[in-house]
Amino acid sequence: MNYKKLTLAAVAFGLITASASSMASGSFSSRGASGAQDPYNFGKITLHKKLLCSSCTMASNSFNKSDAMMVVEKVKNNTKDIQVLSHKERKAVAFYINKRFDIQ
Image (cartoon, rainbow, N blue to C red):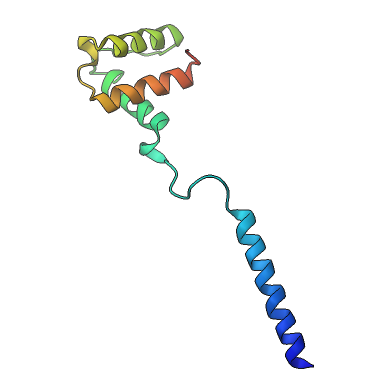
């Protein structure tokens, strides 16, 4: 009798554990991009550190949608102001601005 109860308890525990772990897993990988590796955050950091800082060529006290559109145009045309950025940084800055200011 005790053997049956112990087996039943072990099976129930296994089913509960398997069920909980399968519910916790989603369609996203556990190694998702975060921090500076996320294109949005990387673009934001790059924009503010390399283009909008107080000693940068495009220094500004405010950054609005029209300024953002100007920066995206400069990134697309690879103008002299943008030459301080690598290809990866230019793509990240454009991604950040497009998402942040809803520019299509």
